[in-house]
Length: 260
Image (cartoon, rainbow, N blue to C red):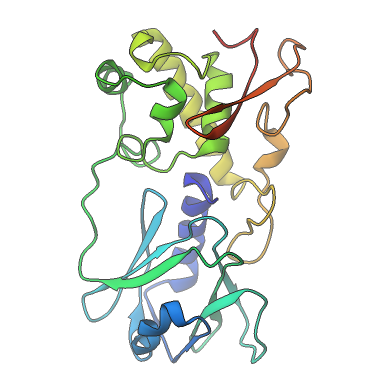
């Protein structure tokens, strides 16, 4: 599933491609779930804003095109082609180039909305988030730190891959009660999150299976993964074999020695 770094890197690339706006010459809908988007032809698509894991493209008429990639969705910018692409659900044709939605599992949602939702969750990339804010919010929660990081009502955009990586770098056991963390530990988590998310964005995300960037290239952050997907392999820091367990129904990778 595309997480904050994947969607942010996609947003940055789209801003370059769309520039001051691109008029949609033709809309091709290949999935009946998206049939209402036929009316986009003739409108102009402008540079998107990312909110959490969602993208919001202003339209000339004042509405917004909302895109949530969900599990396997991705956007591909390519040259004009009459050939149907594998897993293509939607195609927007411009004077120069085409923007296609590819989505094997068909979970991605695309719709026209009147307004952008107000951001309630903290965004570590876009906001000046402080350790004090996170510490205060954590004191009121009866959950684990791993589940806290994945709560989209609290922190926007962080998913399973980056939550595991952030906690390993910070040296925090994912099973810890979030209310038990000290302010010093929250500073370590925030520093870890800022560094990991920043590098992942510059790498255009993590490609483990389906993810590709706007131009069809795999991301590069998988080369830097320290724990995710490495169950039974030695920790790069201490050599202990890494463990995997389920927290909130999600696989969690960690080191029993390095993470306390």
